[in-house]
Image: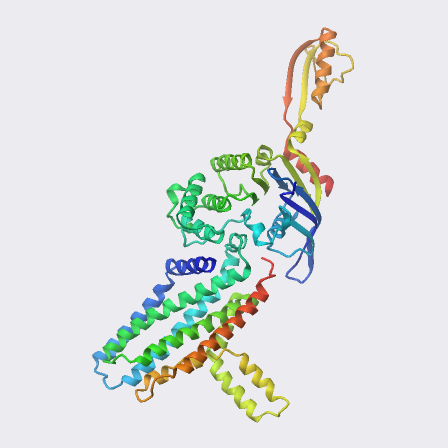
Length: 300
Length: 255
């Protein structure tokens, strides 16, 4: 199957104002399968936006290749299949959201009454029905972000590229966005987005890609990562053979921690055999934030 | 269709931004000034009035065309409205051409509003309508295409303020520069003379499109059609060249 996105050995360099060349992306390679929702993570200045800009053809890579559904990403036929939300969403201040979407829709090749219907529906979907005819300059940052999300969905693209997607959105907006992305995923749309909101990433993504200083640091399945980060704590009364106690018995209760479900089950079986009284079993979900910070620290 | 959509966006923004209000106010000032002169009985000055009107029209419309077109692309970049545009399945040439069409349309609308106002002012003076006035309007509109294309080209190669300043210098000073270059050409040695000729040819000859002096003088006849045809070809070639330079710079520009 052709990858929805394939980036091969991408190098992106900029010339700073002082004339010095800075390499923002250094030999990045990645693949995203059709239908996947992938989070693109990295600290500020890691090269996320530069990668997305190269993918969209906004900057010319120094070397390397970006393919979308097997075609160079900068071609018009590729871009017809992409919906893009830029990092800072700004739209013509003197146009209304409806006019903005109509303009972008026409550039997308949509026409007439069907375009108007789709634009109105998308604005309803992002909760802007009441602001259809309000000028963009009178909208709040979060509402503009909603206009941005709506415009990225025009023409039902096969691939959504969203740069800092939750930026400026309130909790309600984030929840609505989650629903939209989940709906799109069910329809088979591929979603590739960068975000600093790790909770969103955890809830939405099948996979995460972490980059630092323009290089790939880690690529993980979110479900597997969550399993790895999960910790189990067992509280028991008695003497459990082969289990390393975390705390000494207080009031006769001892606690022990396990990194995997298998270890916990083994300990419970042992407890059953040894007639040890189980007081409590606690599951602690691991923090993606801690994992992210640790990964970046290790990479640095 | 893409070009039309982009151009319509530019026009809509210009209207909402109240740019055209500035034009209407300028026109209103022209009418009021003319009315005041008429009130004090300055009759018999038809040629003077027409000449003055043509000068004012020419000046204001060129200024408005430069200011409108000069900020089209830089504002897109500064306001970050460019990204959702270039993310669409359109080429950068489409984007440039659509924006240029929008700039030309706004300049033409401004010019025509000013023409209507000036026409009203001239009517106060008792000036009668003549066909050469239509020729003046037509040629001025062709000249505005050159003005817009030069300004757009400059805005792709320099900072917005530098582009607008440079446009003013080139477009208002082209006549003077041309005369200077022709004088230099006539006195230069044969080895250097072609250089002056090339520089002169590369300057936008917008003064050729200004027949205000001819329109003001009742004794001069209409402009022959072949002249209008030739100027149309010049406009198309020169604007095409400016657009090609803009595209060459913009097509690979990092955004």
